[in-house]
Image (cartoon, rainbow, N blue to C red):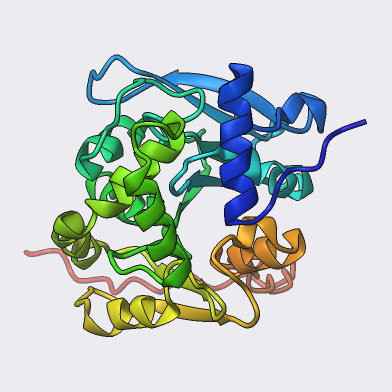
Length: 312
């Protein structure tokens, strides 16, 4: 019988402690919940010649889906917590969710603090099959990284979603976690330690994220729960109002949702993401002009040629 995936900030923290004590990198293995035909683990080489091996989970599809949804997770970066969403995804959509560098099953073991380096490392996720479009989703801390990825690969991204984005200012829960975590850096497991260091040092890097958003030509959607006590919704609203972009960003306030929307109702999460995908363009059938009837008995008379007298 599959174990229930722990939810919430405190239970997620306990999950990583339990995993570290057991010597595992994964917190609740996907294979225990879903067959590989539904959710599958994959590995790829990081971009920019960094030499890292990056871990992710994906939805296998026998037929290429028109849209591929790529999710860059937050801190701690655990793709496993998106497994229910992958399993519920319709067959005409694909999804890949990544463990960012320095987390879970991804290399390196060390902390990678530069969001620009992380964006380059994760760029291979944007490779798509012929005719397939990519919707890039950045969750929490991953929102800034996804913004850089979209700006650096403009021809590979058809839309960007900032989901519960964390933009340098913490809510009460995040402040408490950062305060406690910073005091226990030497004893807490690696993933929690990296998360505390990442979030504490993000503010100085956000200028590059704002500059990236200003260069984008694709639609940008900002989705945020109004009960988010980790990354306050007011900060996301301010980002939308103050950031100068080529086209207006769409803001969606999700009533009753907290910071971890992937741990909420799966239907609500997928509906929010689906709303960021434009409907297919309907192609009208070609209508030819009707042919005029042909009457065999009617033949146009050839014009009479004017005869001139030969010169004498």
